Length: 618
Image 1 (cartoon, helix red, strand yellow):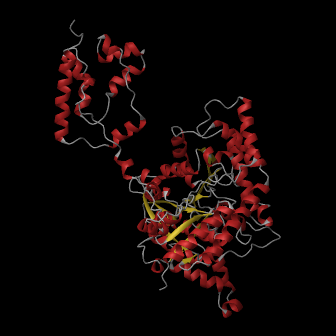
Image 2 (tube, one colour):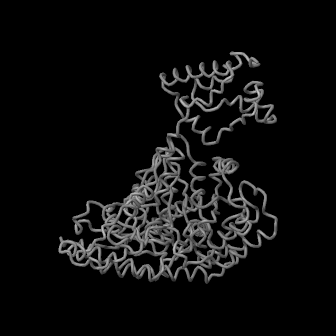
Image 3 (cartoon, helix red, strand yellow):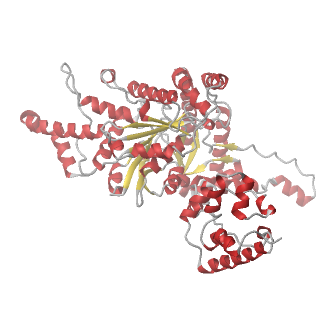
């Protein structure tokens, strides 16, 4: 029987082959609202064999790819058009053209996705190739025995692999999550109340719990006299629940990104920041952290990098990979610079609370802003405390002349201190204005359960917004976040339901014990680095879970760079370190501190032996 359609009907449904794209959106749209058999019959004709075929739905990735793809070259368009005509003829003759193995498909991978490469993954994959290659384990005695036909000595069994490169604190199994977290998830499951879809911005109880957690941690970081008069640092309306700290950062970037935009990132820094920026269409620009100054931000460089396309400044505190914990003074300097440059700050605080030096406590960035705001409202009984030097300027950039004048006036000469009270008053006024501006800097704090509570696989995080002057709200950034969350993957409702108990009832001793273990690992590592020629640690870690070690490659002439140094260490001693190149800091290596003591001792013994074998005094 002849098919119940004409060549014109077929052409109307096969013109997709003449232009970039995948399946005909018209066919799929028309088919979506009808029963499968009916939709398939109407879309592709009434032939039973065709009606039994299930229409293929396009994936979101394919749709995005279609939008980004340029039109195929003319030669390919001609080929597709010819195949379209052949397919039409085949259908008119009752043949199934999709069974033609030689047919060309108009499929192309996302050029954007293929252009983005995680630096740390690229390097670790190259190190993994060392493990895959057969190791040369023939000892010298075995070689001599083979030459003399003497019995070979027994082979030494290969060393076990020790990874000081993996950033997962649960990798070795010795760091356990709090019991409270286990019970909270069990209770959420048993309740039967959290099996449905949660709201796109998070369960209300979870948002309130995060707001209370942020407020409590901020107030705890303030002097008692200051915290007493402070308003809550955060409300539930300021919180968005996400699938982790990484997704939180991606959401912030997407909400701020526009064509031609750029963002300022730390160097060294978490390599995935760069990937996220490229995915959002933002150009990453890198400011330096200063190793000789406890890895503080080079604020002068920040000012020089900023232009009209800069959308935000991203800071990580406590730091990955450097292990720095910024002082309250330096946080004020960061806020003052951001205010002068009119930049919101994305504060990656995923390692919040992990600070193991008493002299360097963790201070949330929002707490520094709250303290500045409180200092602008002195009580009738207590004068305003002196402001940090950082609040004395930066009205037109980090190196502005106004800043220098303000600093000079604020400090004063001997004569000025005696006779120049007016000068001091002007300086105080300038400092107060700068402090008020710094206190109003919009802050997007991102964090999660992963590091502090040792559950990176649970994939729940949050964005907590500090926007006292509604700068982000008026710019519709909050609306942008809400819209993105409406289609972004949502975190597990059960873990969201467990958040209040985890954040509010985990005993303080849990964090104290974690910090003690990390502090011991840091002391061990610093001691061992100090005893190995060719290695140096100019700034000891104060928090987080990592240590950066400088490798003097001049003392290891066999290796042209840190990657080859790490590769040979893995080959000979089966110890994994991440080269600093992965963090945009060549000539360094990152050491993980979340390792059992006995494993850490063994790793440093092997590193010591490796360095002894390859060290050449300069």
